[in-house]
Structures are given as structure tokens and as C-alpha cells.
Image (cartoon, rainbow, N blue to C red; front, side, top):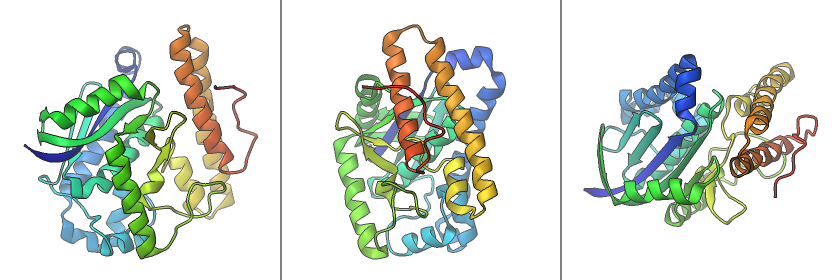
Length: 287
């Protein structure tokens, strides 16, 4: 065993998805396998080609290329990074020195699944673990699973405090080297590649992966420069997510479960407000 940063992700309502929507199941599999294939198919020396970068990490190739050249953030091989998918669970792990890569990749997967749409809950921890393809065992796995099952509660991915502290420190180093990139604090202004922008503090003090971060909708707004494309993205994704959240709330009869849907509605509204538009807000109170 060795020290590894490990993420355990549970796809919520997966049994119902299997019975009701085989096409959605295949889309989920395609997303997870796609990231796993991208990670394993490229070597570190290929990172000199900026065209390869956005496909894996999102954002602009130039920004990510600059970050790679000034930090330890680089492409991972099999010994550095592992990802395993079985039924409704995803486990991804890496050596601690590459933890910012784990945060980026898991954030991308979770938000890509949100676009299906389907919800995830998870935990991320650092401790001893053995992870080789489908073989996974260790304290990090136990702790990440306990975070998912006992602390996350809502459709969110919770970071252990030690993990969050590392990401915040990496973020400070990133800002020192590349300048203070505009972040998702108020109006979105430009691309944000700082690892700490992918996490946020939730209502209970937990650090979580930022919902909706680096979604197709967000990417279109940030990078297209085309107002028509931006409006099309808004109509597509905000409408899709709004309908999905409302339908989940309306069909749910368990008040405890419905509270979790209200949490997601609150995060959706926060996301919409970042673009200074109130037309797409959900008229729902969450306390």
C-alpha cells in the first residue's frame, strides 16, 4: 500500500436509471470510460501539445499549458492515477502529489454526469490504499466511503479537511505564479484554471466540489465570445437543469429526500446568479 488521494463517487438512483433508461446508462458509461481512456492514452511528454489539454482538463490550452510549466500539474500515467467504474460507483485515486489532477478530473466527471442529467454523491480522502485497475482496498477507500455515506447527505462531493487544505494551498501557489485569475465570485469574467476554484465551502462548513463547474453551458459562456452561442447554451442547459430539478422535487414524496432536491435547487440558483440573470431562477426556498 501507499499514500493515495482517493475519491469514492456514488451515482444516485442508478437502479431506477437501469430499469427506465438504458440509453442513459450507456451515456453514463461512455462519460466515465472516456475520462479513463483519455488519462491512460496520453503520456507526460505529449503535454507539450497545447491542443491535447482542453479535452481532459477544460479551459483554454494556453492557460493550462502555462500552469503545467510552472507547477507539478501534469498528465498522469497508470502508476500515478487509477480510475475504476463498477455499477453505480466510481473510484478514482492518485499519488498525493497529483491531487489537483484528481480534483479536476472528478469535478469534470461529476459535472458531465449532471448534464445527463443524473446526480452524484461522494467523498475524497487521503490515506493508505492499494488501487490497481479493479482491485481497491485501504483506509483511504474506507474514509472516502464514510464521507459519502455519512457526511455528504446531499448530491455533493465532500472533501476531507486535509484534502481541502492542500487544494487551498495549491491555489495560493498558483496565484503567486500566474496571477490572481478572476474566479466564480460574483460575475463570471474569464476562464478559471486555479484548482481551488473547483471547490467551495457549503452551508455546514464542509468543502465540496463546486456544482455545475466546467459544464458545457459554463464553457460556452466563458469561451465562445458569441452572444448567439451563449444564448443557445443558456436556453439548452438552464432549461434542461431547471426542468430536471423541478421534476425531481415534484415526484418525490419523502420529505427528507425532497430536502436534498431543494439543496440542489439552491445551488442551481446560486449558479444562475453568477451570470447576473434572474429570469431562470427557481422559485424555491431552501433553508
